[in-house]
Image (cartoon, rainbow, N blue to C red; front, side, top):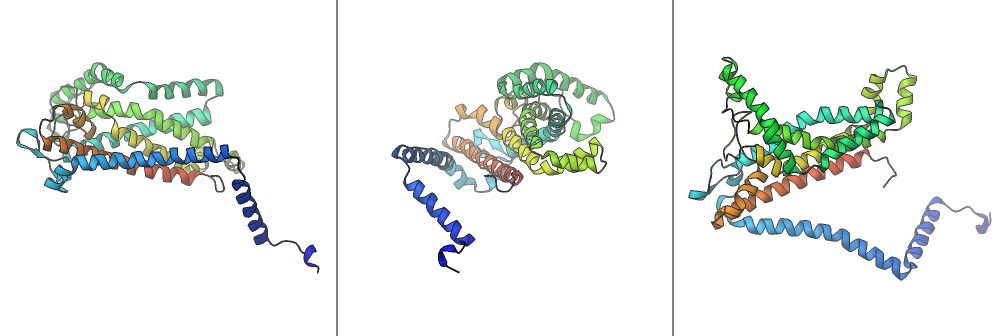
Length: 330
């Protein structure tokens, strides 16, 4: 067979296509090349800013890190008067409030997402979606005031009821001074604040589930609940979990609302209603009052721990969301 009539092999076709794209890229007008460079610099600046933030926190917290080492993470004493600092109470407070809020928020958020994307008619789903997303636009200080004037009195009545009950008041996990401020109130506030984030991500992920997935389940005789349980939710599970982790990152760094209702006691909490503090709240409360170098360095080191923890959570979330992306779509 003549060489000119021979059909090209797949490999040669791919090579020619790549070469053509490369020539087109080299032939781009100067304006396009300039735009590519600007976009590249903007993208790189995000990495530079993140690295600079981590570097500054490390430099600022290095005196405390050098003095206490990893014992800073396990120390339970926070005493600025005697220059003794340990961050364990705040780490425990941060993780407890964040995961406690997620336990309350996840069922409500996923249920709302299922209702909006699968059950509600359009004329109901759109207003409900708007109202849920509106919760994310409310300033955290407003949530704090709402927690003080609305939630705290309710929690205080619950604490009084527990105190008056001979059986419940003997349970150490529930024993506390009935002030209404403390860990449980902070958990409730955070749960309300992270619901719109989890709901929005879960709703979008559920809408990405192919319609054929539902139709195949219906064709096999599945009920609507069985379709949701066996066809829709498993397909969207990784994306929903990614939304949950994004909300966890939001909860870990929340400052004002939590600071206003958690009680800000620098000790490891021993009660669900006890007063404690988080990493963000102790920084907000004491940063302007830190009058010794070691106190300031310890607060900056707490900020570094919170910074790294938030980055890790968000990276895990991005990996999980990427798993949901259909193959071949970038």
